[in-house]
Length: 239
Ligand code: G3P
Ligand code: MG
Image (cartoon, rainbow, N blue to C red; front, top):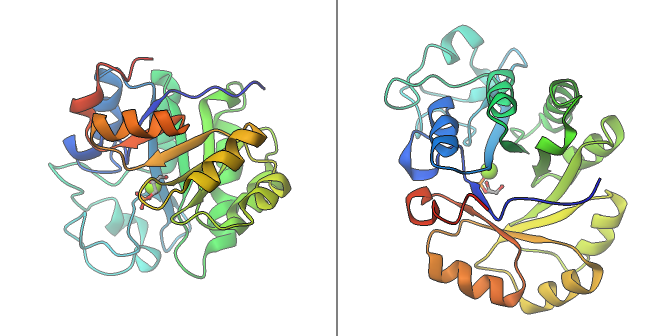
């Protein structure tokens, strides 16, 4: 499958313009012309994959405690901002597919749930995007998640994801048969960019909220960006 990704990816659904990791955020990104969204997926106490970033509920909802210790009934009754619910992964995936959005599914396991989270998310993703695998891109900070993704659903594209790209990133990239490298632009070095260019590996950076930062990164060889400021780049997001 030839690699192609939109240059701009809405971060955590609708970035800063909607409650993060919600269906409202995904719908907003689509309305604003974005062609791709990123969201984070973790398991509830019952093993249900849901969209949430933190292992704890306090920052983004009116709940308390650990996501991995919260039952579905309680989790889905919480307010994730502006009356939005925490979405089930299947709902969010179906919405992206119906809207024609590329979904970057970040597998975000709570500590101790690495294998279970990846297996659940990858199996569901393979089924949901069976007829449109080009509309999903799996990523994770946890290498084990990507090993599981490679082995369970080799047809789905995978991206390595790092806060700081390690020196041996390219051997991991080859082992995982990945298609792109995602990383924090703050720590990204030209050494990595030169190496990525030499191997034809696209580099996508998070979280780029200033158009001037994007211009500078493009000049250094970066291919795409995750952004929270959908409003500042919406005119460029359609391409
Ligand atoms: O996948 C890019 C970005 O989402 C990684 O950081 O912490 O926002 O999930 P975080
Ligand atoms: Mg994320």
